[in-house]
Picture (tube, rainbow, N blue to C red):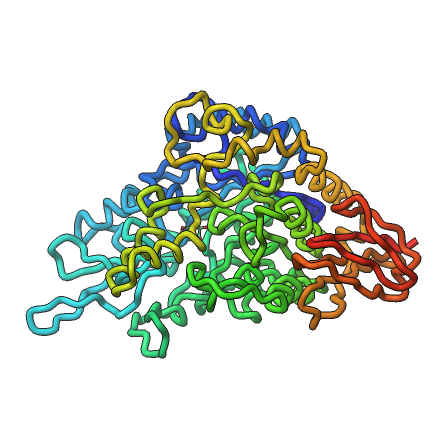
Length: 560
Ligand code: GLC
């Protein structure tokens, strides 16, 4: 029986490497997570999504899986995971597993088998093609560039064949055309659901189906990625329906897909209820409002109208016959208080709480990334060597190879790096921010941990955490906050974000000053008599028809 529990859920994302190190070896682990479950519960989350915990050689920090039915030794054992699962369930926290099924690690037994001989039955689990001979040169089967820079094809030893990898060369793309691959995948999902987990987050799911035969990308782009041949591919909907029918429909499970720049039509179709594909997908369009063309490292002045388009578009598109998600941060983005032209030195509390009110009072399931609930900031990296994410290095190398001065290249990387969100959690002001007992950590800790940490925030008079608690309590208890239809106001206003949520006769109104200057905002007539449910300043000046909003002030009203 499907209960649609995800509709009033609040999901908290744990990046296991950096959440909490229980055995003081420098890496986060399951015993560490267990010791912090109460923090997640106290916040008001109702579900936890764990970034990959499976065995992995960690070329892409867990997103290169070498055994989908295991727990990596650095995080603990399967018995530890079982304890974690029941500890979550005991606290009424659902568990969402990360499923990385566009590719496997090249250390996965399937891949090892596949390349061991041309006759291996596993050969067709991957996308392996002959290279193109040009005189004495052997060129890859197509000109596609990997999402992580360089050719998307890697030669298999000294042979004439190459395998496709849309990400690192250690992440070989699976061939979803092969029914045996899809059976294996259904079995893996079934394994985890039978264990009792409650749902899945699917990594870059809209790349599963590729266009065959493989051909060159001849469109004009900065990089020939071949995206038109693997994003929202021809069999995407069929593959998802098959999994839904075989697996998801048999459990009270929830699915959320991480999409890679989907077309608006495809994005709607993936979550349309009657299509029986996924329950929801992530939409990140608003997070590209401070970069050029979705390229994280290339900063541009923040564009609030683009942010609003990205935030409200999916709420509108999926209202009638789908579901939506609400995201501000994850392990692939810098911290939100250091983006969108915000000066976190001056307005950290105000901006963190304003962003939460604006994003998480919308239509959809909120996803909160660890540390976001305490307004954690970016890390002041001083050199590329401090960064662990391979993507930071790949892009830095590409920039400097193209002649960009090192300092400039590093400043770009530092702006958009995924590393910011991946440094160990700053829990308190003890050694290593309380992440562990003082053992050197796999990734440097944020040098500001004494000044900005979870305990300090929770104890502060103006606490981001306590604001989140209040906000999430409203979200979970108000039917209007859960089911209401979003209507945006004053779209063209370049300082203010304003919207209503309507359900039956009840209405909520959110308005926020998304700027460092005070703004007077004229309220819609129906809001004049409304009561203020939440305010991140604790005081506001309300006139006859308008309200004076301080820098980054946010107010939530409820119609009387
Ligand atoms: C997703 C993950 C990211 C990973 C990539 C390849 O975007 O969120 O961390 O590097 O897929 O698996």
